[in-house]
Image (cartoon, rainbow, N blue to C red; front, top):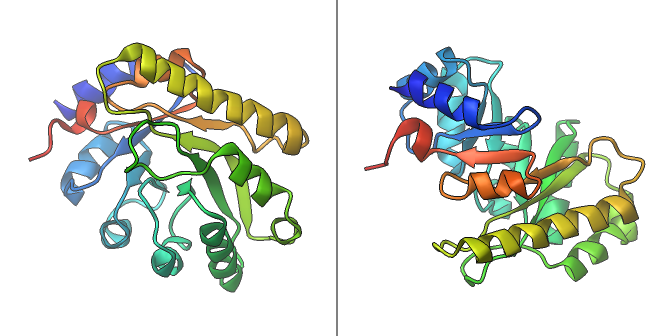
Length: 220
């Protein structure tokens, strides 16, 4: 069923939108089966889980860290993550730059914005993002590469609210692109959409969707 689930999903996702298979809590053998079916990008939200799985799986997997990243765990993530989705504070970005500098590795990052009505979600607002990007300290950073933005919509059945939140995130993306990243071809990712709302996200301009349940099935 894993191969069939993946194929059905890939038929539903247009060219130009990348699929991050959310493999949190999944055993290595299950991830390997999805890899063997053709998937190469996997997302984990727990540092220890990613660190444990990484050496047991093929080296050409592109690992994304999609969870809330604590600063004291950054040093474990920077050697293995191709993309960190959740830069939700200037302090975290500084820590990533510092730890990446120790191993001379430039780490791709997305700025996470708070677009949902739930207070439990993490993220920046546009003013905070502008403060980061206009700071002299950011301009001196050599080991982080901001490639776009990420956000999570409210967990709700109200599709109009979800659409509104995704449009809000896209407006942030376009504003930052125009103001700060016109000369950066790397600043192109608009990471939004999960199993329950990825179709709306794609309609609103998502370039990257994070999907677990539709591939792996419901978690226990």
